[in-house]
Length: 183
Image: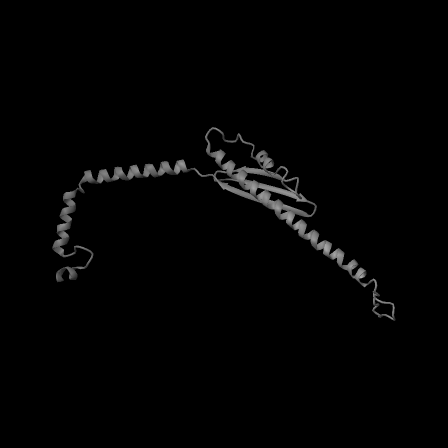
């Protein structure tokens, strides 16, 4: 079987056209592939940093609730332990932990050449024991207030007397005086 030559350009043929075209296209295709790979690695590392910072903030908030262990935990070390061996691009991430009266804040920073990541995660310092104690105290105060009002004179007899006054005026029930006169 013989190959047919396409005669173009004065009968020389088109032997190296595909090679020349691919020499232009291959670097572009390679760059697109590398951008996709680096973008994937970037978001992978970002998710690892966010997850570790969030977990560290929650652990810090839980440790702050314990009365005897305030300030004993090394939360920056805990953060480093959580990201050890998991990052692809940003191997040298640093974290700082700030504890305020309202929350624990973990701030992580990572950099590699022209790429930078800065992640901040917070966890609220919840104190449900204090809120429960306040509600319990409020209930006790309300019960004490009810006892005082019943002892001072707003007894059941006075309540019954006010109902008879309403009946005389014709304002019993949910209707108006006109409706009660119709009955």
